[in-house]
Each structure stands twice: as C-alpha cells, then as structure tokens.
Image 1 (cartoon, one colour):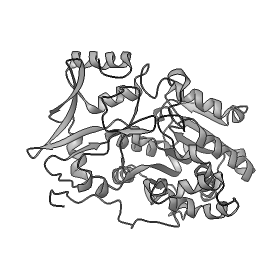
Image 2 (cartoon, one colour):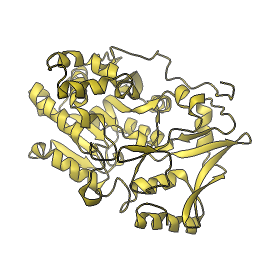
Image 3 (cartoon, helix red, strand yellow):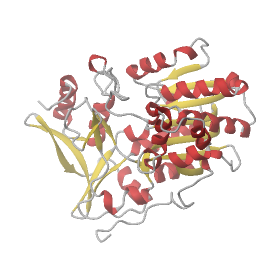
Length: 395
C-alpha cells in the first residue's frame, strides 16, 4: 500500500476500482477534504499542528499580526466609503487557525470602537478540526454570540446579504485542480489510477469541456510536453463571492501570478507542490493524506470571472506594497531595530520572500472607483491582469 493515511488510501483505491481512473482534481479533493480522513478535515496526529511553526507550513499570520492589522484598517476605510453600515460584515473564507481573525478583531477593538460595535465577523469553514482551533483562538470574542459566527460554505449565505468585506488568505491555492499535459498537440488530462498497490497517472481525454474553455478564455496555446494546472473550482468560488456581496470589497491574498506569468515558459512542469514538516515535494502520491497540496493561483482568471459576475477590479498588488500603503513603515519606526518583532515584520516585506510572493487582488461592488490606501503602491501595470499570450516552445 502507498505511504500515507491507510483508511484514506483505501477509500481512494476503492473508488478507482469501482469507477476507473479519476481526474487528479477528484484525487486532490479526497486527499484534502474527505469528510472523515482528509488532511484538512481531521486533527493532526498526536496533537500536531497542520499550520504554524511546528506544522507542515506557516502563513503570514503565524509570522506577525501586521497583515491582519493592515486588513482591519483597510476595512475601516471601506466602512467609511460604504457610509458606515450597521452591521459591517467581514466574511473570512478559510480562516486557518483563526489567527488573522483574532488579530483583526483585536486591532478593531483597540483602534476604533464605533467600527467594532457594528462589526460582525463570519467565518466560512467546513473543517471540524480547523473550527476547533479557530474557536480556541477566538475565545475572548465569543462571549457576544453575534460577534463571530460560522457557516460551512458560502452557499448558506443569501444573495446580496453582505455589506462589508469578503477576504481570504491562502485559500484558493488549496482548491483541487485539474492537471493537463500537451501530448502530440492535444490537451490531455492527468487521471489517477491504482495498480499493483500504488497510485499512478494516466493521460486521458479531458473530463470536462470547461478545461478547453479555460484555455480559450486566456488565449493559451501551450507547447508540446507542457504540464500545468487549471483551477475550475476557483471560478465557481468567485461567482459565489460575487453573488453573496451586496456592497463592499473582496480581498484575495495568495501566492500566484497573472496568467501570463503562471502559464509562461519557465513553468513547463506546473506549480503543484506538497508540504510536510515544512519540506516541499513535487510527489502527490507520497504521504497521501499526511501532507498539504497546493498550486499557484491564476489571478487573471479570478479577475475576469469576477468582472463577469459584477465585481470590478479595484487593484492588484503584492503584500509588501499593500503593507507599505497601509503604513507599515510607521509601525516599524516604533520597534527596536533588530528586535524579534522588528525582524518578523521585515519577513512579511522581504522582496525575495513573502513580500512579493504573496499577491493581493482587490475587487469592489456598489462603490464608485474607491481609492484605497492599500493600493497606493502598485508594482503591476494596469493591464497586468489581461489574458495571457500564447506560450511557444521557442520562448
């Protein structure tokens, strides 16, 4: 039997034996989100963390509260633009351990009591293990029942029910993806088979015409042997976000690229990575159910689908530029240079690390051309999110 969670492996192997090879997207869905055995759905073995310094990977919220504070201040600016509605709702989709929510609420309570009094924080989370961690970290805010609440999925929220901000931090990169490969000039999809007691890959005709439609939308013509990922779930998710938001901002934070960069010649093998004990691997069939699986985000497609669904692009920036726009330099001035806290904030800004790796797409609805502090510094040209040109083998 392959290395990994034995019950999960049996579930996947049994499905393949019943139905035949499954698209990689289905394999990834089962590995990460199987209701009982999925990586994100159960607690870490022997109390170990999934996320954090002792987990498989860490996020900006593990490093320092600066990002949460900046998001809280950007939300307060949006509150002013919206006319200070009551309630002002923040929807955080996929809240991890709840650290960003904790620090967002803490900053709001300390810095702007009138905003905090109207604030309602809703977390979209389907993982029981993650919910338990979130409740633990948000314990001080749960005494008032209406302050923080949970739903399993966006579908539970009514059309146009949110006035405020909808945000996510490292959510879309963990959506299950289809993987494709160009073989003899044709687009083939990677399916997962189970043979001889191990998982293996098969190239077959695409499981859905949506894959070809995705490539056409971006005007992509990929060269022979090119392997990459297509995140169809992200498109459905963005439509749901647009459906739920009445007026306000959508802020999507993740590592990723414009389509032009993501599907460029230097990523001919795709961007799929697995993380275990903060070590990266490209093999999704090792430690099945015991390691995280991620891919880089196509921000062009998120922006395009969002526009079609009624979300206008406010701006596209990176974490370093966003934090600078929100005044991080003044925060650094108040810290002792060389201190641990000073170094933690710097880690969020490093151009060769988190500062430029993480991008922030901001969209708006029901606000006329908002001027946001977080977008004062824009490292990308206004046309950065247009569809990608063709990729050729000569580039």
